[in-house]
Length: 219
Image (cartoon, rainbow, N blue to C red):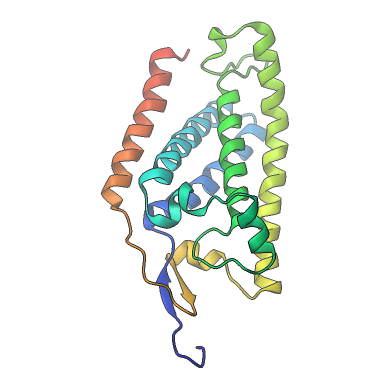
């Protein structure tokens, strides 16, 4: 507690965003493990689930709670420089964290999309391989395999950042992503959280688009 006594728990991450985060962690781990073990049927299902979550996150980044909205936390070069100079204040993702979020979402989306057109040249093809030329399938298959290592590297950087903030800045980034709240001093006015029912509706729509689309066009 600070001398001013103004420190208090502040809602930072809403429930839909936290569930998205930890679901994505689980799906990434299952995707990696199933791919390495040759369980490609499971691997493809995990990829479709990842695409569903990415679509949900894009929508939630527009209509979700303030800290979930891209317009709220994505900064230009000026915001990044201000953060590096110690002149940034706010709740949620800082400007560097925003870059990490965008990189992770973009790479995951590209990886999962490429997987739809990937073939192992033996017995298993992605559901949309039939719609692409042989050259395109070969290109996307190679990118999909290399992208897995890029994602692993990005995850490593993410974990390193968590450790850095914990050791050097005394800030635990994991607990707020579990509880949704963070002790802050001075404590800002609480944000108005978006409805979890809206999040559920968006998730259902995203799942319908991905799995419905694959059911219609996939082979």
